[in-house]
Image (cartoon, rainbow, N blue to C red; front, side, top):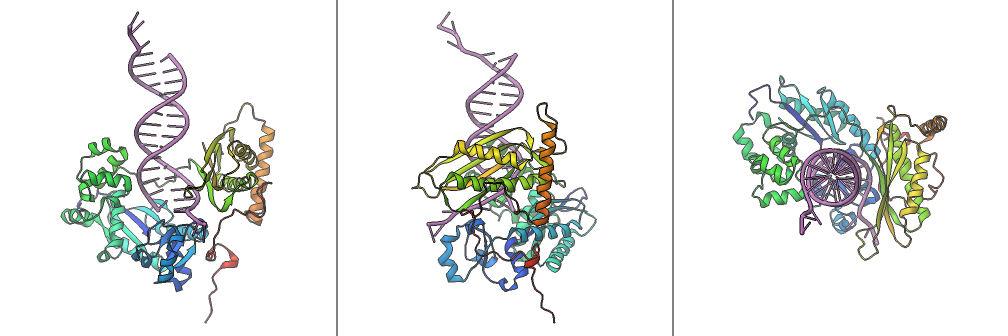
Amino acid sequence: MVNSSSRIKNIALIDANNFYVSCERVFNPGLLKKPVVVLSNNDGCVVARSNEVKALGIKMGEPWFKLRTLAQKHGIIALSSNYPLYADMSQRMMTLLGHFSPFQEVYSIDECFLLLDSQYDITHVGQTMQKNMADCLGLPVGVGMAATKTLAKLANHVAKKRPMYAGVCNFNTMHVDDLEHLLAEIDVSEVWGVGARSADQLRAMGLANVLALRQADECQLRRRFSVVMGRIVLELKGISCLALETIMPPRKQIQSSRSFGTPVYEQDELVEAVLTFMRRGVRRLRQQKLMAGAVHLFIQTNPFRERDPQYRQGITLPLPIPTADELQLARIVRSGLTKIYRPGYAYHKAGILLTELENAAGQQGDLFSDPAARQKSGALMDTLDALRQRFGRDIIHVAGEGVCQRWAIKSANRSPRYTTNWTELPVVRAG
DNA sequence: TCTGGGGTCCTAGGACCC
DNA sequence: TCTGGGGTCCTAGGACCC
């Protein structure tokens, strides 16, 4: 893996440490060095942990109510999630990192891949990125570099876990013996794409660490698992199978769903929820200039309440022609709900899934559709878009969404939307 | 009392066709 | 008595990711 040849690719993975917690700390330095968690919707589960919390052994995804005593004992600060803030910080981070290479793949809210030019000292470039993120945004990041995406992910893991790397680790400049020694110490479950299930099976086959997996026979593992595992093995060997996706592929589905703050029994209330989800889904559909060919609607009781009667049902509702018309979509889910709703259950979650998405611009005409009606619907939707743009996205509802929304989520400890809402900007004291 | 939400890809198996 | 077989399409479910 010594970087003797310029043909070896330099792929960097930059990833913010404890992203949500770090975003909160930027605007509230009082949270620095304190144990902090950020909770999911409804303040249900832990979705981000500061290092102090990780040190206490608290796991990702742990239900918050189970941690109350421990939290009290250690003074853990719990924040409701504040997605507008994180999304905005993410955008700033990606823009800044984009200056380091024309080849950037934004992989998730807090990480991106960059293809770097080998003529520079790549490790130094990584250190510059790290400093840049700290100086401009106040975000701590880890940087991993290697010849493939899977190896870069691992290098990033090493950069964060081993203090000697100080957050920047480049596999491409390591001697192969050192690298293999390192990989032998890493559990196979740390490999990108190896989940808990596969990790158990790999261990049972005697492939417990990353080096063992790297040296395994690709064909055999492909047959035993799937093509995905085959690719992972090749990537670990330094053979690139996963291309850098610099252009975001179009969405294939848009989902909008929520657990309820309190159980819902009545059909009318479910209608409220489902119509609200549909409005949110359609907003994203229209933002991305897409149309949906079908909608899937689902409702379910709480699977954790095992003693309660359980019911879960979904229905796929095809549209005669693809549409982004909120009113039409609202009508169709409302009628779909009457088909799957059963009285007598405590519903806990519902959602809609817009599928068979296609580009609104490339929309084909339909022999039976009425062009005048389509034009009218388009004009109405444009008006709604404009009103919401001007007065806020929740200004207009479809009739039936309800006003009080008793089922709406709980979000007890949300921080202000520092960067995206004028009334919540942080105040800077002069002098 | 209280257990997230939003995605992707792959595979197996059934339906269907010739 | 003999009781096809191969290709394709679709869907549900599994696994994984952040």
